[in-house]
Structures are given as C-alpha cells and as structure tokens.
Image 1 (tube, helix red, strand yellow):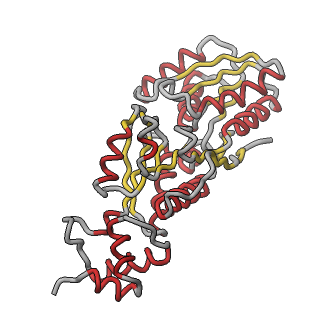
Image 2 (cartoon, one colour):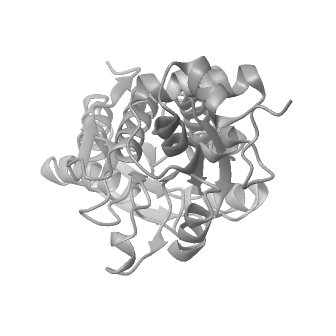
Length: 318
C-alpha cells in the first residue's frame, strides 16, 4: 500500500496541513516540525503524488561560487553542506566562473520548487521588481541589494592588519597583486585596507592584477613580469593561491621578498606554512549564512540586517 500524507503526519506527530505546507513550501513550518516531517518521509519512503521527485529534493539550496580552484570556496562549500545538512537541507554547487548571473534562472527554479533558496557570492542581474518575488537569498562577500542580507569577513580591517605586519618587518617597496581583475569585489576592500596603512607610512606601492581565468603557467609568467628587475621588499596578494604562485615564482628567480596572502585555507597553509595571511572564519561564515537563509525560508517576512561582518584572524604576525 502506498504511503500517504496522513501516514507521514501520524509518524511525525503533526497535522496533515503542516505536512502539506512542508511538502509544497506554501507556508510557515517550525524547524522542529520540519525535522520531524523530514525524518518521517525518509523512514516511510513517501513520494509526493504531484512530482516524480521526493519531497526531500524540494529542500535543496543552490550555492553559487565563482570557482573552486581557490580552496577557500571548496572549504566554504564543505562547511555550508554540513551546516545545511544538520538543519535538514541538501545543497548543490553551481560555478559561474566570474560571469554575471541572471536572477530569472534561479527564480524559475524556485517557482518550480526545484530549490528552496540561494547562497551566492556572484554578481546577480536583478531588477527591483524581482526583489519582491520571495526567493530566499543570502549573499556572500558582495552587497547585491540592501534587501538581500550580505555575510562577509572584515576585509578592510584584515587588509590593514596585513599591511601593518609588513611594515613592522621594515618593508617599504610594496607590490600588491589582485588575484582576479575580472572582479574587484570583495578584494577591493582588502586593497583599500592595505593601501590606507601603506600610504600613512609613505611606503612605495605598485598595484597589479591577474586574470582569474588564466592558466597557472600564464599567471606565473605575469607575476614574473611584475617582479623581474624591480626592487620589491614585499608582495601582498589578495588571496592565498596568488601568494603561493608568487612564492614559487620568487623562488625560481631567486628573489627574497616577503609574501602575504588572504583566506588562510588548510591546503595553502600546508604548502606554505610561513605565509602571512588573514584567516577567514570559514565555519562561522557557513553557519551564519545557513541560519539566515533558513530563517528567511521559514519566515519570509522576518526582518534581517543588510550586512553581517565577522573578523578575520592574522596568521604568522610578529
């Protein structure tokens, strides 16, 4: 005999109407009831009549990142996946490779009940009218709109801390390398933080950038061109991957420059233990984004702040 919605309600000890709201995502269901219903559906093997997909698939969060070549995004997705799973949600990763995304694509998926919400660190082309479509969105590291909550590390302050650490080591000839010229947001705040301190103490600054889409070899050649036959005391990079490439290039050329990065990922720390870098609080960022998104899913009218900022920790400072 086929499992019915009534069976699910009895197993979960909630009303049939509550189960219906959960399955169709048509109203408020408390987190406790949602968890009970989810477990009952899984135990009984319930399949919604109006869909070839299980209702479990209707609790899917899409996560949109530029790429996972930067291990920061890989670690962040890993933590998001765990945080969302703890709350009864699955997630799927979409990579945009620094291309502007069309909001209508996600809105169509939401209306078809293919996704319950979106976490994105990408540029979204979104109109004022589309902001009122009730698609739950949390943005990471870029402010899309004041109506969409943004979660970020304190990039400005961390950039300033890195610059101060560089100056404390007596470095005055500074090369700043932006790891992605396609998208200066959020690295713009990191650069601003560094330049504010460097300019205060009258350091000599050169600013350059890489194409994020270029190959590793092409990036190394570009860095080689930035440092060859130039007096550079320190190379300050806006991410750890660029810092690692700068180190490999400097080692190849026999250049003894101080190198700094940003992100503090496990992988780069294992490859470059002495790197001065700002460690972003990855688990705390993932937990906060998950909590905010789910609160918006279960209560679309709940008021949330426009920006949430967490501190980054400087690694290998004096």
